[in-house]
Each structure stands twice: as C-alpha cells, then as structure tokens.
Length: 152
Length: 152
DNA sequence: ACTTGAACCTGTAGTTGCTACAGGGATTAT
DNA sequence: ATAATCCCTGTAGCAACTACAGGTTCAAGT
Image (cartoon, rainbow over all chains, first blue to last red; front, side, top):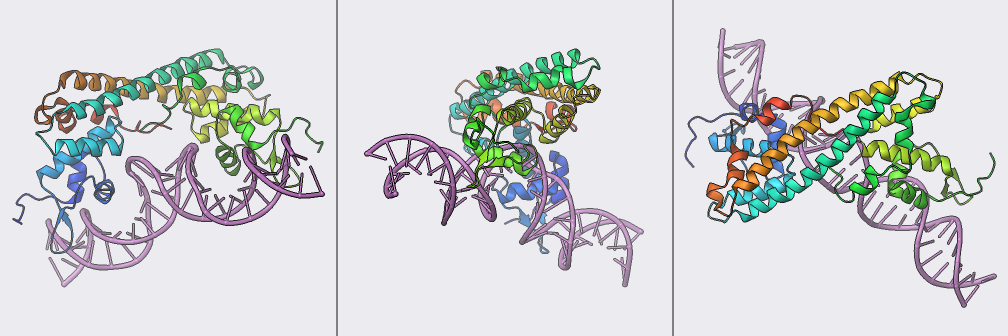
C-alpha cells in the first residue's frame, strides 16, 4: 500500500465533514466508514476519499435517512454501473415518510398555535393547553399516525 | 383507601390510551404515572383518572413534547390554581422548536423531490441523488441547523 | 373444584445514533 | 526535552421505549 501524501488525522476529517472524531470512530465500528490506514503509532490517517464519504454520510443523515438507508445508498454508489432505480426507490420511500411527518408536524404546529393564543394568563384550571392534551376525542394522533411514528 | 369499583388492568389501560403495557410500566418507573393500586396477587389496577393521565401523556408525546416537558405540564396541571403562564411558556418554547423543525423538514422534502425527479432510471454514475448527498457545497444542513438537531 | 389460557409480574438487555468519559500513548512545536 | 495537543481503546451513558425470559395470577369454562 502506497503512503498517502496529504493524509489527515481523524480530528480534521471530522471537522471537514461537520462532526466529531467519536462519530467517525462510531461509523467505522458499524461499518459505514471502513478501516482507515494507520501510522506506526496506530493513529488513523485519511485521504480525500474519506472526506467525501463522510460528507456523504453526514448529509444523508442530516436529510433524515436512517443509518440503514445510508448503508444502502453507499452500497449502491460503490457500484456505479448499476441502474439507479433502487437509489430512486430509497429516496422515494424516504420522501413519503418525510411528507407524512410534515403533515403531522404542521397539524401539531397549528394546534400549538391555537393553544398558545387561547391561553392568555388565566388559571391552569381553564387552560386550553391542558384541556387539549387531555382530550380523549382528539383525532390528530390516533388517525394520522399508524406506523409513521419515529424520526428514522 | 376504598376499593375501586370499575378497575381495569394494565393491558386495557394501555389499549385505551393507545400504547403498550410495557410503556405504562416504564412511565411508572420514571415517575410519570405514579404507583397504581394492586390486587392481592400484586397486579396493577387502574381507574378512570389513570386513563386520563396516560392519555394526556401519550398526546403530549405524540405532539412531540419531551418526557421532561410532559413532567412539567403534569406538575402544573396538578396545581389548578396556578396561573397558566408557565404552561403557556412551555408550549410557546415548544412551538418555536416545532417551527424550526418544520422549516428544515420542508427544505428536505423539496430537496428529495428534486432528487427523485432528476433521477429517471439512468446509471448510478450520473445519479443526482448520490451527487447531491456527496456535494460539499450543500448549504441546507450546514447553515440552518446549528442547535436544532433532534426530535425532542 | 379444577384446568386452561390469557394476562400479568420483575428484571434485564436490546434498540438507534450517537456522546462522554477514563486512563493512557503519539505527534508536533518550541 | 518537554509541553501542548492530538489520538487511542474500551466502556458507559443518553432518550424513550421495546422485547424478552422465566415465573405468577386471574377469569372463565367444564
């Protein structure tokens, strides 16, 4: 293996991709990052490819893709000759999840706004916020939320 | 303490509030639910008050309030004579968080839509999705997201 | 009264995606 | 040479549950 000329340490790699060294080591452990080359003393050294890969991962995560989804995307991008229908499928699936989360979230925002505007310094006894949250007939959560619960 | 006439078990309580028995026991353990009365054999029995409390908790959680926030809200609703400015403050603070999350999420949706529309079955090599996620100059995540990262 | 089967119990460990130590060793700059 | 700063491994912690394992109790049917 040839020695890498402009190799950087884990700290700068992390900084360049906008995360922490611990996160990089974590990604290595779970197999997202692959093993880095090491110095004689055992410290990790990275090249530009690692910066690109980590940046990809961070962006995908920022976009809300789960680690499993990122793994899929990475596997696909490692095979450039493959048709990208699968990539498209992953993204489409994710888009659907995002849209349903958006809907729930904006319903929540409206409800919160309503709460805040109706609570004008009266007593807790007559507070709309408590009331709305206690209300058994509330429909937003029950109906809209079968299955699409968590932020991947 | 008087014997509760229409007492229900943990299973039905959970069902009525839309969660699982494990979750109820968890809420008891972390002090959200308070200790239930028990049968001679040691099984938990609940009344209507518990149903209301658990429903409140579940709704607040569905609305994205953190467990700590729910704890605050519960403490407040346990003191009905208190002015509800604090309740209002908690809700307002939460509203802000929700709005920033909404913004990030709809930016994400637009980006995903763009990705999906630009990936029309070509090869991964030229796939916009991979490209966008690898792009170092991407600005959405870096700029908009200092501090408002996680779903409470 | 007895038996079956579902519901319940406690306690512990797993999940996701990191983050934060502790207690050392390596590298770099002066 | 030595100090400052990086880096190493390994482990434990966070939220907010969820899922067992291995045993007990309850309610209903016969």
